[in-house]
Image (cartoon, rainbow, N blue to C red; front, side, top):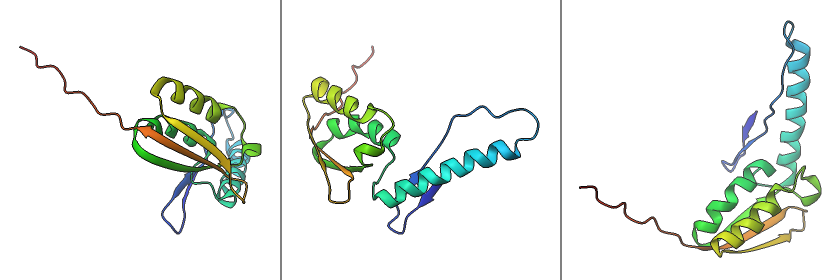
Amino acid sequence: LALTTDSGCVLSANSVQSLPRGDLGPAADRCCTKLRGELLALLESGACACEHTADQLIVFMALAGGTSRLRAPPAAALSSLHLPTAVHFAERLSGATFRITESEDGCQLVECDGVGARARPAPLLE
């Protein structure tokens, strides 16, 4: 499921779930109800991305030039350690510097001073 906020931010919630054969109605309704709850919680948190998207953005923040900022869900709302793990390895592998602080509303503010990586030209083939 996805929603677009008044400011144009697209938030999403998803699930990988095996549904039983036959009458999918009740199982699909339960799945959609769960996702709707997750999406509303994300919207109410003030984060700009769910925890699963946030940890995927870390590598791009590390490689970008300048300072990147991301509002991630509150630490207490995370279901895994993917975000801090992504930050840990991105710092060590790229040399970027990350700072994670908590905002007044509980969201995690992730800031990164990226390395400004540039693509090298591909070698010419003869």
